[in-house]
Image 1 (tube, rainbow, N blue to C red):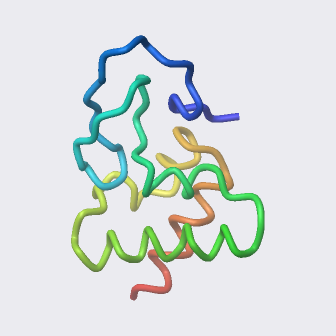
Image 2 (cartoon, rainbow, N blue to C red; image 1 turned 30 degrees about the vertical axis):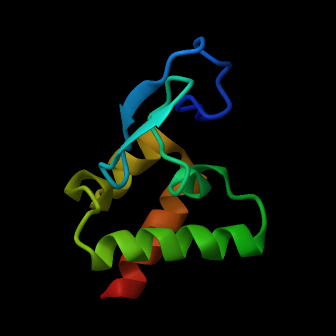
Length: 97
């Protein structure tokens, strides 16, 4: 299972600033993670509706030209994110063409 800091315990009372690996937005949270709240659905989807939401999120990043070019490589995604997130990313890329 790929973790990326999702549901990490609190680091304390202070806020930690992180950069999302999908959309490159900088966000504050009380735990160290690498995925913002908007993009976490890409890694954690479990149902058909969540899958559609994840594809829509990646499609929105493609349309706004915010999707990192590394994420267009299927082998990179499989290695770093696992097969489920790769499926979402590749389906969104295919549907955007």
